[in-house]
Length: 475
Image (cartoon, rainbow, N blue to C red; front, side, top):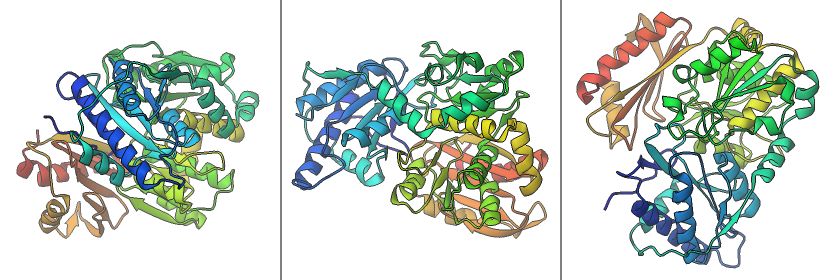
């Protein structure tokens, strides 16, 4: 039988090859067995798994059918699941896991190509940690799955919209925002939400139609897939372009000139606004693959700062425990603490915060970035992914071998620090950095770099290719 493994953010596979109805039923039964076992352990005590389960899905091919299959297996195990009546973003499932007090199961492959689908698990408003996903994996194939045809179906769209309204200053956006905002849904699960929240006079929506092929691109809000948004901003002479990924938990930004701004630029802008206008004083946490700008902001403002392994669940735990107030990751996921909020990234909520930022400050995205750049320096960030022959099973061992290869200087600059949190991050004396990070579940090597000039960033990436490509068969 095919293995079912949960990686950084869920189990994913190619539809009809790995992600089949049979394998989905196996995964659903393992989830059911895990939940029942945990409920028995926590009998008579309040537990994040004590409430009813909810099953959601995005707009990918057959996501609704896969979700129904999961709900039927959970129902056959007397877990009283509710299947959503319509596609909703992954953050909505996270919100419902907190609201209802049970596990949330989301059928999505997030930003992956159209041929993929997957399953994410949510508990208490955020992604399930490794102890949960490994626990579920341990139950795979221990019980034969059964199904019940009778399942409960309910719409929770209004509940999610109410949650967004409770966390965003829609009044400021409606009364003070100048110009038009273009929302690019990338044919994903967030489609149409902005129209239910904002003034139609200042709103243009693109790629909102249901298209399981996502218009021929990956539903990932990064520069190479946001050409349509850039053109729409220019055509409508809009003030900003805001993009959501396939399951709407990630966010991408295009300024009023149609220029894409990277997460390494977006995150420090968010941090500054929350500190200066919302009076946040708590720690900033980010994934190790994000840039140096937020750390510079934190140092300037006297705020604590910490880097953590890649995967939003790691920074989310800091938020959930109260150890941090602001969290970000390189792939465009952001979250910040509030009394009504959950420790989860949310693309739509981030878009609303950025519109609020523009409305309150009266500034355009390029002006907001110029202020950051003038005070804290330039940021030119780039990432390249290499396919390799086989996954790197032992990351620490791989990292140790790479450390031994390193010269004393890179691009005539000394090495200031080696961070071995998740792969190897090399920080140079001038603050520029390079990260080489193998995936633990896929035959993939991710290489990241950031400096103050395009040619220097590319040179750092070229150095990394020399080190990792020959030994790993990258192509």
